[in-house]
Length: 349
Ligand code: ADP
Ligand code: MG
Ligand code: MG
Image (cartoon, rainbow, N blue to C red; front, side, top):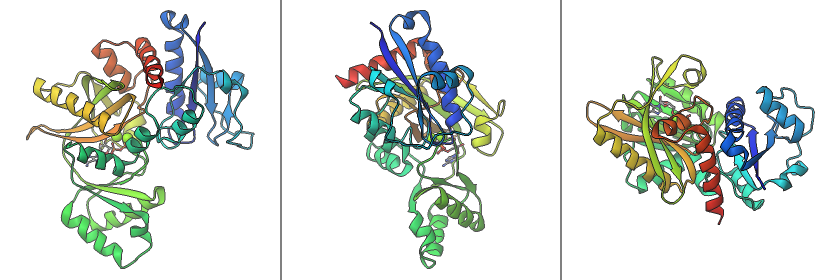
């Protein structure tokens, strides 16, 4: 009998459409001859308002790639479609808040059915840039200088705020990057070059998140490594992202032609193995499972490598970095999807 794979996509985040594209690519891979004899897809589509759709409606979104724009239902998050009871293994492919941050992983854990990817801890630590950096620092991974800030420091006390800005200026300098701690896709991130920009960026970041991080800016190449596995994870070849915009912002990420992926990146062999080693350490440091994409800054002039972040549910469309890195390493997309499901089953034993 076939294993019924609950493909869970859409979701309540800014990356709803990316999630649909990722799910379509995974569905195609599951329909490939060697997988079709093993797996059957049960689609579950989470609307932008949080309502769960299964059956024909979910299948239609999967087939057409078009999100349901004006959902008619009133979301009742504690009512799930009856098909959820038939799932043998979940494949959540939801990016960003409510998908990649441990919330859905908690629900699936309560459901007592194996699922692809990191559990509650790995997802939550990987999502929150402050917790993530604390874990990386503890593991001895090199990072740019940073400072963790809360919304309360920005908004609640007019006496504290100027001192906070003084401290950022003296310890991090300009340019620096102001980021909401729990987002992705560069949403809410600002590169600031003056006191005025810093104040505005902190205020804006506080509107996105209770937790904020400010980092010293670095001039570097952006390189990424894919990790696959559970307790003995493997690292892929390294990829590089190039673009002409000021930084890798939302528009650059999602506008066709604004960024290029180079696989493999042209790097000295010693740097490649160092990055691969660091990617695995990062994966273990946050207790990730199944898959992650680990992103780095490489300063060519000095040979320095700084870890930037881990993404526990990276983009998984046909053209996304994660599956492309594995394809270049020798694991084609269809096989990768199969292996991820097998790692989910292994982990639940
Ligand atoms: P996200 O999780 O939204 O992808 P990142 O922390 O990866 O957030 O930041 C998005 C982009 O912003 C990076 O890919 C890079 O281009 C730029 N960036 C972020 N932090 C720095 C930094 N400290 N120095 C230089 N560029 C940075
Ligand atoms: Mg990220
Ligand atoms: Mg990033």
